[in-house]
Image 1: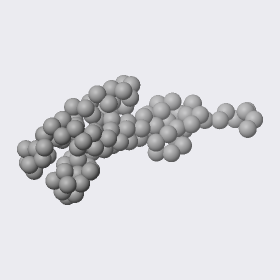
Image 2 (image 1 turned 30 degrees about the vertical axis):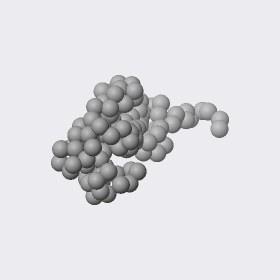
Image 3 (image 1 turned 90 degrees about the vertical axis):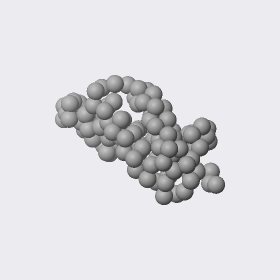
Length: 119
């Protein structure tokens, strides 16, 4: 067995990364779009981790109560959820407050310079 995936790499990619990661991305996006604090998506990812562990157990014969693999799943899902949150929040800040902020990168925003300010 591997330290990151339990049954196989393909199963890990399918269940945790593609299915769970997609759901986590949409969870982070939903939290951002409703202007909720970022800690809320962390609580949602805990529940999503249990769902991903159950799919590993029910469909692929994985261990349901494995703490090690639950932590790995949680971290992967948390990264996807954070990405969904940041992308959505930076878009919100740039669109909603366009006179104050502009997008710096897909994950961040910065203050817009006023025309009379010095550098």
